Amino acid sequence: MFASMARSLKNLKLDGGCIVFNFINTVNSRIQTSEFDYLKDYSDLLAWAEKAELLDKKRLKLISVCLEGDEGKGKRVFKKTIKIRELLYAFFSVIAQGGTPDVAMEESFNVALGQAFSMIRITINSGASKVTFTDRNVSLEEPLWIILISAYKILTEVDYGRIRACPGCGWLFLDTSKNGKRRWCNMQVCGSHDKALRYYHRNKTNSNPNN
Image: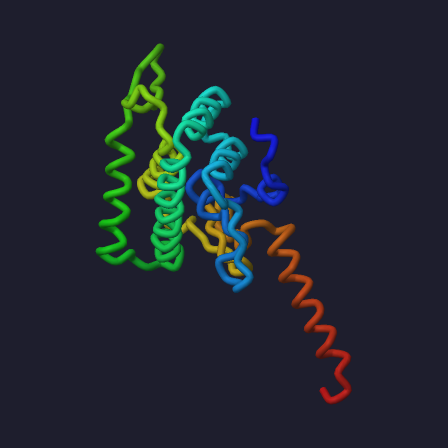
């Protein structure tokens, strides 16, 4: 749908294991100073939402049309969304380290979560439930609401010991491995890089004539 999607966004890995962590991980590294943000504006957010399958194509198209009708609002909603992304990163990073978010952080999270939940509508059909939003009009905040609901599900349904931060890049991910010992967000990226570095330094030490 979004033919102009930046190549960097097309190549972005979805290694978080859930919507909220994949959203938090739209910054290339949370550790290195050469930080790169994959989301530059609201159009990038929609392109990412399509990639992450947050909404169906029809709904994304309606939101895209809504954006064209009010670019000023798009900028405001995008700014709010990125602010909440950084709140979510800080919030879940504390949990990944075995800590407890402070009161101010917790309150900010609950305010954002409350706004998302205030828009939810549950419908039951043939024994199955479906989550939609109460506002019949299309809203530019819909991707953010879905992200926040994902955060709620992680907090209420997942063992916190499975919430991890990659030591290579700082990305957050759910450890779904059977033994619960997954270390890297992506073994082929951060894991391989770490192995290569250790191999290099080991060989360098072994070849040093002063050792």
